[in-house]
Length: 582
Image 1: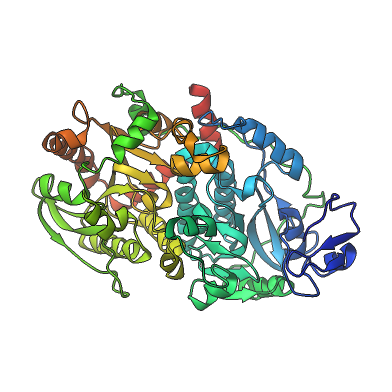
Image 2 (image 1 turned 30 degrees about the vertical axis):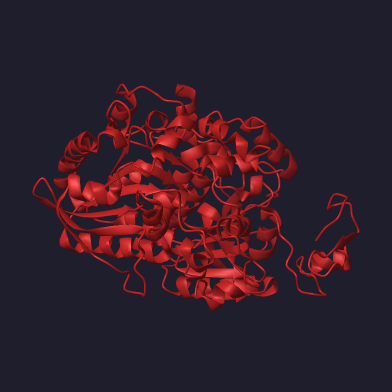
């Protein structure tokens, strides 16, 4: 629906679907659904909550977190200026509103995203608030309902926004382990890091009629593939046809459908006092400031304190990380490991060449090794899809991870990808859900996991193999929420600002080590890994053994707990602490 006057003042709206001129009060009575064509207009989080929860039952959770600009990001505007404008324009502190309430008399914890606030992007504060909501659901032993509306992870917070995908996913894993129901409601639009994590790794996934969801957005897919998209691509009905959602629900039926689902979960839940009621409006600032974040564990603190190798310019590092001569996963399997036996297939109909994995030995110890495979020549790169994994690749990796856990073998992952495959076929086969399931499984895997960023660590495609007990990074590798070119195209006038975006994203190993995203930097030979692959392999082998051996003696339950603590510390309060330290 489009209009020129503020929504509160205008009497008429024009439907974006059929261009009908609609009386505003009539449209509101119809839940902002066009009575002529049925188009569902986007809703802000406050209005969505009004429509879903029982009157008077909403108890909002504290949402005042320390203001953070964790990587001092500046494009054409400083990041704090964008935050201030978003808060003024929406009346909300952040891009999500969280609370507990009842729906049809059944209690639930809710986190409702608001696309009006910086495109509903997932930053440290949003991740922290949703995680706390999941933790509240676990404490109260009630279901969790997530209503998603997002363009993806927040570029202005770099790799720290990428970490939120793992942080929220492991909170959902805790609810899964406790036998508590989790439900996501996809609304228009839901893309990127949100789609590839908590929007699709819940027990049930509902899509509101007219919603669109995917890992890559339509514009990106057109640019990469150079082809027009199928009719209705990534829409709710498309998702239903391709088996990616449980149901498509009209807005007028959404509250009743959620009530029915929560009733099934409530049937087995012990009786408890009713959810506290709170009468004040949810549309003004609420809550109290939170306490200090937990300190980083000793391992993370030590990594930040260690002297780091000399720093290159970020854009030079990006070019080195992409060098066609840089050693690949298959090269390292030949030089670092012994007796590699490759295992193929996802057991669902595909074998993605961009992901290789199998059994190998590291200094005589059996391990499961999984990594992205690019290639050195143009023919190899094309055959391996430039290291961009399809859903079959992520599901092959998932199968091997689970096999390693059953056999009691540690997992070593080698990350080198520009990102996950953004093609039409990948979307049709559930790219977002495949990445989300990998992230969720890694948060629960009861065996040591050691990840190494060897070249490019691109977005959710990299994180799908990098939720680990220890994350190492080669000196001239990069790890980022988005490519510099992609960031420049969105936040700068054109893609020629990619070098500037690379510096702003803090994507180099020394920067990420200071932020706590990476635990240790593996030094490369004087120039780069591709100039002396044998020396690089020796250094990588030594680093792998030094980090893996201590993990072998840790009990599985302790291992999982520590892994979750590692990612839990990437919340907004912790980010504020890091920024202050710099």
